[in-house]
Image (cartoon, rainbow, N blue to C red; front, side, top):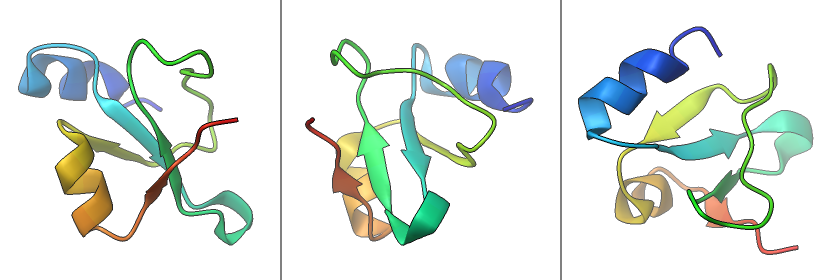
Length: 61
């Protein structure tokens, strides 16, 4: 979570937030109804394509 601000700068905006908590391997996109950052989130990507290439799937609940 401490690296979140660095990724905001690196990506030029809010990053895609990914988690592998409980082997979920899911991500949330900025503007999504469930978009949030928690201490369990450990990966950040600039695009959905990067998150998908890393093996994550979109969380749409």
